[in-house]
Length: 465
Image (spheres, rainbow, N blue to C red):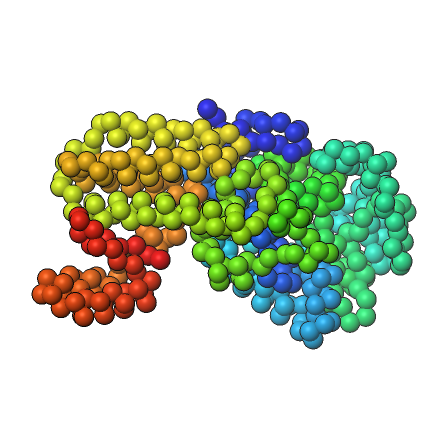
């Protein structure tokens, strides 16, 4: 089957057809870098990383852009509280972001543009909207005339009359209508600012993504993604700005991951129940956290709990143990021809994996294919005539699927370094000579290095803890 993507705009699954054959442009809204990322930031980071990996596995060249909001009200408030500059705060948490997503197996985007590096493009877009009558300057601020875009609300499926309820004009705002939104904010005394035709100031939140998406990916994107909470107002405002400027659709496919709940309560700043990734990975294996996120379909709400994490850790351990067993048996099994029945099963399982991923990136069901391969491997390894060719076939299939899901850490695919190899060989000799004290000493040393040894009837096997 061909790849089907659920389009938030149309509310149906659509066959994915990129604008340029063989290439995909994808923009996903990134974090505001005023603090460490929380699990709400981690979910889209992990999911869209899988989308990118699967598209690449399918033969596409993916141009993947994730922005950093490195100036806004939150950064300015933090600067006032800490005495640090906005720039220093942003640099600190951008570095922390890279460290956190790397721990989760998320590959860096093709480009991570920053607001502060694209002020010229933002100012030019605002000027274009003013010239075309879609925006207006008022007392040093610039606002978008929402009523000038009749389709406002088409993504979140709300109409402008409904959206007006609950909207109020804040003190100091000089809007023509309450639903108009800000494109440029005049600078207050002491705030970070840039020059513009409307005076010193800084960009509003929504305009930055319109400008950067256009700069790095063109007028129309293949995929625009983000969390469910970004549908309104952020993505609605992006659509209005971009489409009024270009006269073209901003994106052909809109994808949004579901909310996260903490112990069945919605995660929110007001409840104070956010969980930072950098703290969580100190006590939970990062790949188990990735496994946990991928165990639920991306569009569904996800309930974060200790029980759920432990179940994910257990599932991941089954896969890791299966891979460790395969690696060990490959080293001791005789050569031979790949078993035809096993090869047929592997081909079927891989096809099922593709079917699940082609069905709107259904990672929850796609994970089943990995367990099926582990079960196939465990069954085959019990045979007395198991050969290395068949075992390698199974291992390569697991690695292929892991190349999309990323649930096995890269270090799991690495060989032992020379020092550990030497220690294992020395321990083997110590056991042969019945030097049990030295054998135990080496085991303890290897354990300290994160290597767990297991003596089996078939010989010594190892795995990383």
